[in-house]
Length: 236
Image (cartoon, rainbow, N blue to C red; front, side, top):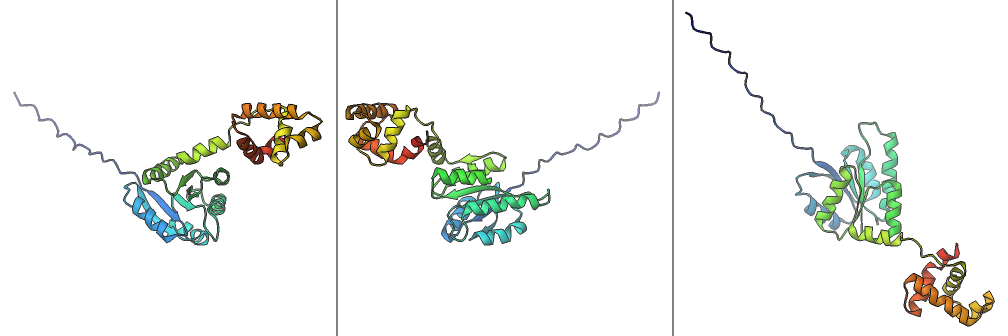
């Protein structure tokens, strides 16, 4: 009886290696060298980021962007030669002229200003994030990661102020809106009463009603609100 032939040797096991994700290629644009130095120091050590270039002006950024082929730009809003919002608009408009393999980078605005108007303009031109310059490094990194992943990011302080600025307008009656608009023009209760053919007591009653609706207590606060918002209420 002959012995059975030994089984063929097993093929060598295939070792699966997981390739590390490519780091995010970051381009910093700010006209203050100290700010760029600070950002490089804060972000340069992050393992998932690679700072591929810096620019001190909008014109310099436009000259470098095609060479750098960055994934994301961190752009200062308040540059002197060309503000960051205009730069973002130009960069993103170029996307229509680029080959599909070279899409325009995502843009995160970096700013000292939490003005809702700036934030809205930046988002309208296509920026995907807005971060304050005094934000901690972790917040800037969170913005970069969120935007690189296809999302958006606003600094919490910016988001809070933007939401408050867009809060629904309190509902006033047409007469109350007229009186608030007149207060915003600096008119007294006597002037308003004369112009609207009302008694002074009626005007004062409307003023009290307006304060209740707006959650305002003092007369000074009411006048301040009227000056800031009278045009809005005057539009109906």
